[in-house]
Length: 81
Image (cartoon, rainbow, N blue to C red):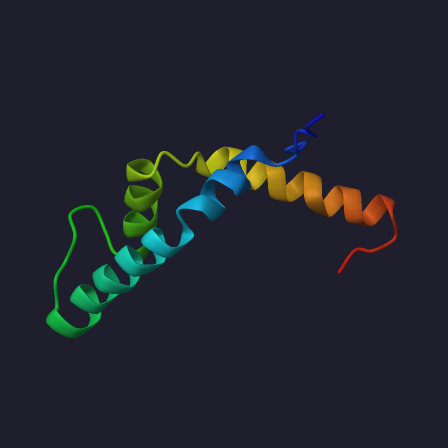
């Protein structure tokens, strides 16, 4: 009998699966901006993060809601930072 893993924070899990790729892309784009003076349309770093999330199909609003849920769970357990 196989056990299925309960995924409480699915968007974070999805983000974890592409973490190395997003990190490499983000570092490269940061390098372009900082070292080469490249200016992305619509702004700098925040726009790059938004575009990376969009490309990798990560819902940033859902990530924030999951973080809030994590913090609330910690508070309820008396483990809040």
